[in-house]
Image (tube, rainbow, N blue to C red; front, side, top):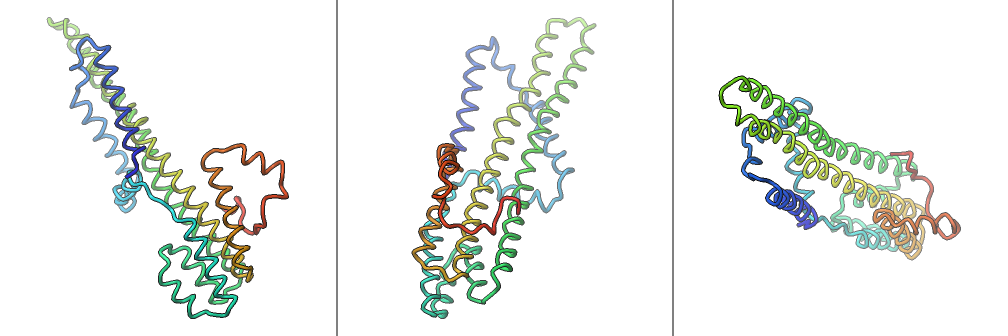
Length: 283
């Protein structure tokens, strides 16, 4: 379970509720069930129109990734590649075949299988790069659903506010003018609901999905680099140490450690031996 997602949503909702109770003269005015239904229902309806049903069917699975803290076994992947390199140097292809059955990472399993099938290195790179590109496009489309919902929610919040203001103005000439201010406050609540749903739920979920995709793509690129070295019959020790440097570098980039990047610029000769066949432009 990813506690940061749950804690962020709960803290955000809690702070909003506390600020309402501390500042509002009548907190009950912030409860507007028809307005909430307009925002949620309108957002879901517009999303259904915008995306095919097949893509929307994956939303619940995607939400599971947001609330689940998925750990990626980078060290295990490096060990598997180094072990395959050791077996390949000894010509023990049968044991590599046995090793493939125990590898849980399908991308890594495919990479090693292509090498032991004597597939040319450039073809291996093309196949693996295509799979990375397909992954990024697919998961970017999933994140786009929540980006779109974050746009629709405030729009339908404004729609609810306009409907409420029309109803309020219709009663201005009536005998009960004391409720005009109350009706105005209720009308504005749908805009508030739309902003909260957009900026506390939908948009953060989209950003988290995009970060997850980038992390997965970086790990897959590390596997591509290891596969290239495996195909080149490099030593297991060289492969292990190079991939450790590769994963450490991108771990710093994921954490936003700018000092590591500056060190790379100041000392390019210490970057480590990496293949240049996989570039950012490929994605």
